[in-house]
Length: 132
Image 1: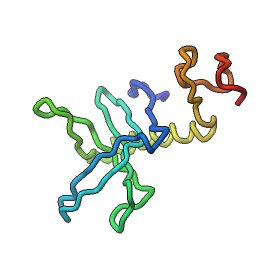
Image 2: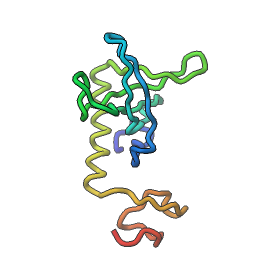
Image 3: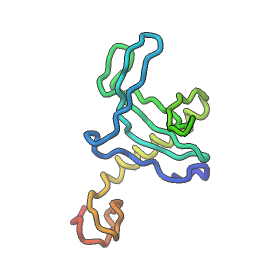
Image 4: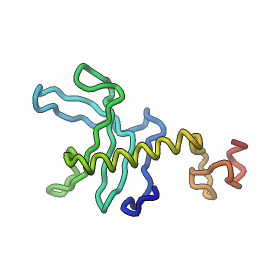
């Protein structure tokens, strides 16, 4: 990301089958809802995760994204909802910019060579990916 506050690029979960599942409790209904982790981002020294419902229902749409902060409490990592509207907008804009960049430049290579560190593009000289 170009924004100086972002310490690293968003890490997108390329293969949703291998993505981490997070179960959240809906405090209003008492129902547990499974979410898929689709991305993570470090911003101003804090880690945020982007989640989408594994199975959409009447309350949560299939294209809805929930942004939560990873917080350490009593030596364990927990998730807290981001409630600051301005921060939510900044985080979502960064996520959207990364998604637009992926659309514009295509998917990253899945090779395992040390030369490109799994992030080669059409200018990569590693030779293991073929022409893009």
